[in-house]
Length: 294
Image (cartoon, rainbow, N blue to C red; front, side):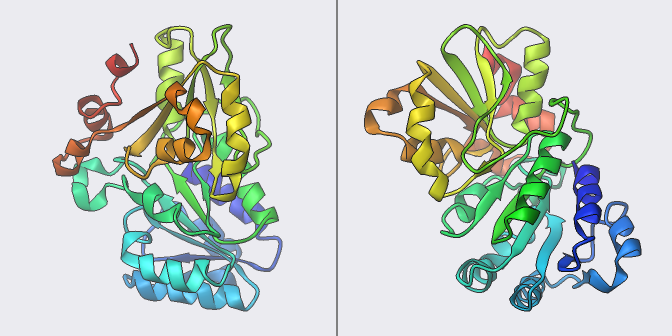
């Protein structure tokens, strides 16, 4: 996902208002942009709150700023700056985070990004872009470039396979059909949990469920969800985030009360907050193991 992001950003940077800011990390990923556009690449150092203020300042002068860091650093550490400087002023700052969920789980709770949806989705102007594979990354970057504003691009860490054969067309609130089934049951995922469902599908473990992905969502796209839900008898949302305040909660808020019985949330158990380990280990111990889908 990281490679797809930087490749798309370099293409987009042909427009002279695209800038990239980092917090003294991202190396082995961001160098191609820095080499191609040194005048629009800024290393703000290990000072994330100042970094977000810098991004807001650049955006106020007409730039669309992409600010890149490991997921925990530019979110909760910068919550006030995101709320007051970026979202409130409706500025074109895209917060790009790598390692959503527990991708950095071997570094412990400080590096878990499992409450970030809950924070970001309460910002009225913020659009969440949570792609599930490199093709969705490309689609999301293209959408964000063409529709600048406050946004949050949440990436996996590395090694994600392409589930889509080509770059899809994405819009906020739209469901992308990944695998179809004759049954009226579906998994609806956002972010890199698409990788988990892809692997389960290849092993024929999805028990007649179709699979849909939603890479773009926000407050204003809630209004379209009731009609999308109507066609299914059961919907299991899947996310690498805590259930409270996450994607499944967002969907439940979006749909009519009569439809809520259809929705089950599959998310990380709160016990993960006290655990350290690799991503697969933490998934298997906290509600996102293959057995949880059987």
